[in-house]
Amino acid sequence: MENLNSFITDMLVGAGIDAGGIEINPIYGGGNNRVVSVQTNAGKYLAKTYYSHPSDTRNRLAAEYAFLSYACKIRLECVPKPIFCDQKNNIGLYEFVEGRKLESLELTQKHIMAAASFIKGLNARQDRDQTLPVASEGCFSIERHFFIINERLNRLRNLPVVSELDRKVISFVDEIENAWKSIKNKITSSDGSISRELDAEDRCISPSDFGFHNALLKGSEDICFIDFEYAGWDDPAKMVGDFFLQPAVPVSLKYLDIFISEALDYSKNKAELAKRARLLFPVFKIKWCCLMLNEFLPDAAKRRRFANPTLDPEQSKLLQLNKAQTFFISKEA
Image 1 (cartoon, rainbow, N blue to C red):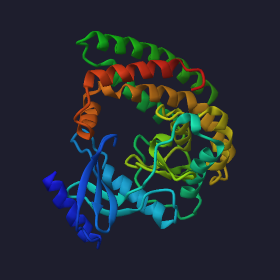
Image 2 (cartoon, rainbow, N blue to C red):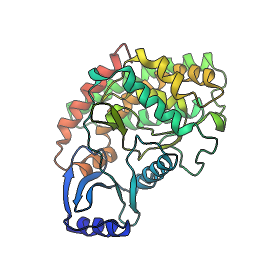
Image 3 (cartoon, rainbow, N blue to C red):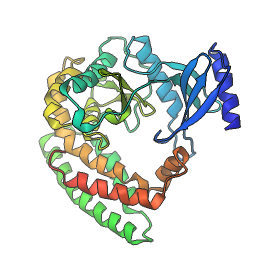
């Protein structure tokens, strides 16, 4: 913490902010990263130390900082302002947003439309930022989506079996694979161009891990979207799937049509993109089943422990397996 205090002080000074009276406190629940609040005489800020490992090649700090810089450049008010970026120490300094997390049951059409308008706003300009990276696991052909999910299933299938819990997860992965084969066959037979890539103008700038689990309600109405380490250029079908399928704060599918209509309004081919989003929805449900089992993968478990060293790994695994099994059989998703 002493080094972190020094690093953040230097960042504040670099940003022209008075670092006097600095007080740093951890905030748990930051996903893969170590997150702290930074109170100074000048105000309150948020600092993230991003997870980094040789097996994880994504530059999370660069992705989030570039995304927020673009969003602020085009004057979107629903995201935190980026303040300073320390690439050497892998720390980002941001505006601190006072707000609370939303629960699924309190979501209204107004909230969903705010999220859709955020996507539309990111993509409404003709001069969208071409320097932004491709989103995490971003791809532009159906065939490539298939490949990524196949790889995720392969990693899960090859987990070492050393406990009864491991045997249960392997058995569940078999169930997922059976459903996955059927989904792939159905999509391939209905769309003969699975190798064709989306045209550049139909791609979207996406927060990627997008949903109300990464949002704060400020006051009684305004929503601020947060956490963009996976952000970048992506397939709008994946953006739609992620928004509705993320399990932390589920969004009812009764809002699917209005969300798609607003969010994809940046494209002249909105109708075709909407059709693609509905076609690929089952694909991303399978992907989210895999994502929910990340706790069983060594690299993902390391990221979680980096963010929160107090986690009980076995308890986390059991919890995630139960959630994934419930999600898999859910009718709405």
